[in-house]
Image (cartoon, rainbow, N blue to C red; front, side, top):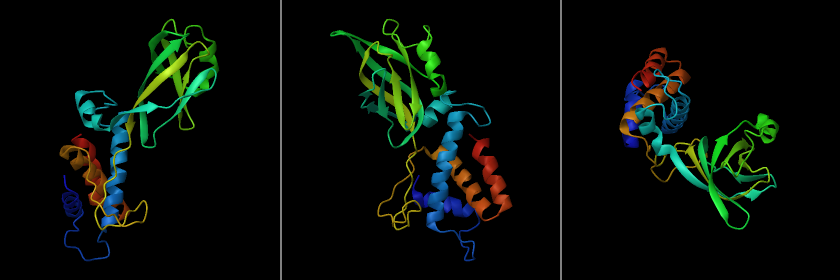
Length: 232
């Protein structure tokens, strides 16, 4: 969907198509509210806070709607004796999995099943014979801390390579000639929404409720809030 269409739809829902009063919205407000609405909608679907209670890959629809945000990233890991650490990508939003190839000695290699664990349980996991990293059982765990993925080896094996599969932040739309609300710079390129048109319609309703709340427009706020999830 073109940004011009998104703009028309948002102004129409807010009754601002021909408005010249003090509530007339600017293009940067449309950009900011739409981009905020994208993040809110995505986080809600990933967590399952919707009418159908379907979270990340909880149904065919969730898989189909969110697959555009799935990315693969080659982690550059550093050996820290009993774990390997790699920095998360800048646009990281939520964990999916990490694929690890490990080796022990000079020639024995195997892929590893990696579970995401809680940083608070680290010491217990490393001591527990049934949960600690094991090259023999091809299982280990990882934690997230300080913007890094920590893959634990307990000194039993080495990590040869690691690939992170994750959900990234949705791409922010930009409108040519409009001041970017995040940088203050005039946008010189047109960046359109990456989602399908049916999802954009839901995000538009979400953005309308944000703008209507800012303007204290109760009717538009209620309508946008209800329709954003009713048809999801």
